[in-house]
Length: 351
Image (tube, rainbow, N blue to C red; front, side):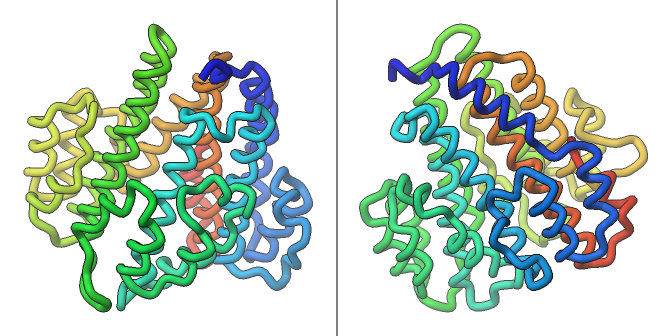
């Protein structure tokens, strides 16, 4: 892994970060009143033009636009890896592993007998993965777009570590899938892979900074899960406990358990406010915990983007910043879909 530190990659990522959506772009997007207008602005005025150049914005619908936005992220990641000739490097493959897991989870959702409209995003996401990037996947993406049953997914994943992970949860067609356990096990595999690669290839300050970035991801993931389960689902505390990814978490098992034992989502937030995690909670509005979690991710990533010159760190935080930008755009699109006041959506934008 002698070329894992690529000054060219760090410089390229910083230059590409310079092409991100700015305050004035979000202000313009918030003025739009249709998906077509948003698509037109992204196509004609932003760095998304490369992905959207062939679209007819007046014919595009929400799902297609979200798919193209994600495709743009894939293309940027691929561009960085190809630019530095690091497409086979284990550290930089961590990003591909995360995308593989996202595709597997969406594929499983697609075979649910009562899947929602949002689950249909799977079809768009799979279809819009650039073929050149899917060549780096450990399974055939074209085949996974044809799946009908759990057994189909297992067959496609036969030569990957993922098959062993999801096989214990196999169900027959029409039966309920244990997504809580599957997601936990897949992300446990992902973070185990991440920390193993970091341990094997880095030391000192660089290792500490990379570990801190990923441990923060785990911490935020667990807090969001606890809150969402309490707020939106009727599940037992044992079921919530099963969903936790505790690998290298800085949160103690006892504190996680205290949060899980709280009777309501509001009490979870109050408990966080009373702890060192009080920065998750707004004094006036307890609604948007996912916003505050993403704000923490953003501020951490932005700090490293500005001050680090280490390519592994710059690449990692650039990927995080891309994900947050996508969330911003999708929030604006959803505001149009549900006729949400733009002032409410503006509060959720992180830039």
